[in-house]
Length: 350
Image 1: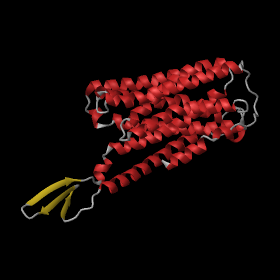
Image 2: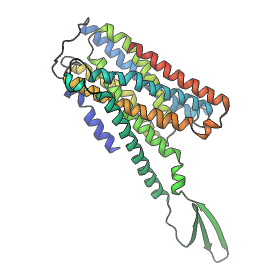
Image 3: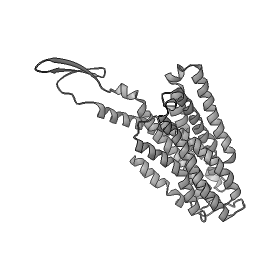
Image 4: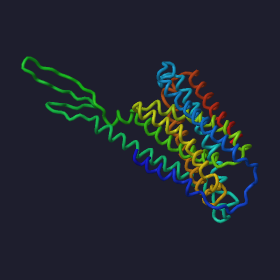
């Protein structure tokens, strides 16, 4: 978790960096500082609550037998969440990255002569693959080294079993103990779920702080009002997606609650930054556009990779899906398209 702390320390200092002067003429909007502040404070509470409810629904669902991860209904809910995350990346975040990095406020050369947003997104997805692979290897090695026992006495090892022979004064005992091997660790889903949930949360956090910052710096009530509703639904659905991944891990209760709270608070933190910097933050400054464009594109790459590779491909190509019958397959695909569709529809107001 140390690398996450370093990343977040640098990331949350970005609002200060991007509060620069403007080089581009802005579009005039109706401004009302008092009304805007009231709406922003309301949005802070609304988004905090809806995001928290969204992420906690799958987590609390573990207490309901019908919603446990081994049930088909959970598989269908997870497909909905994967659709939400994919639509978030392609419909909400990536277009913002292109808009930022092709803005007329930036110099024509090089920003509009090369698709930087697409390039950053591609590199982000490839780097996520690298992190995914390295993290899997790290967790696998650590898991195996802890699980491998130190044997004593007369032992014979065959395919992950330890055949132990013990001798006592009054008898002779034979035992067989199953221990983890490299193959069994590879098949352990908890390792994959741990990595998926952590990387996914990092991608969502980047995007959440940016949209919170954008809302917090707005001074137009006509812009803020529809954003409150849209972003509340946005955080609710994203929370469900993240919660569905967290619930499949073997985190302790404290870690699970901390991850849920961390997600719930990121957009409100961004709003708070925006309110504090609203007097001098300019979203159309060169520095702001470049920083936000790169972060949006990076976040899009992470979420595209996670949704397609670690969520959809893993689940839909699994034995559980292939042998689940027509009901499970139809329900999962319907849920997937509904999730992607609902999240795409929300983009109309964001």
